[in-house]
Amino acid sequence: MKNNRNFSSFEGGNRRRGSSLPIIPIALVVLVIALLAFFWSRGGEQPQQRVEKVIPAEKLGQ
Image (cartoon, rainbow, N blue to C red; front, side, top):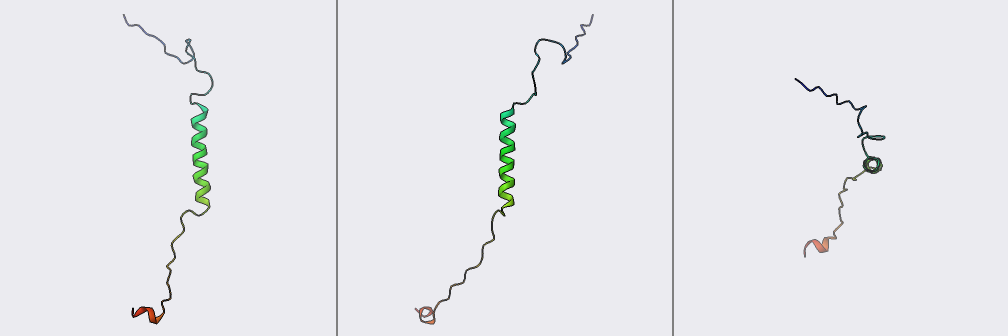
């Protein structure tokens, strides 16, 4: 004989209350994404500009 058990989520004593994921890790992930979006919107890394120094002719021969 087969023993057919119904593993329904609606019955049994081990019911979870509320959401299945804890709120703190979700809040941390949202905070990290918000910080990344904030820094991205500020422009991120700026391209380097070439700096040319003027060297007097007297110092070129030394």
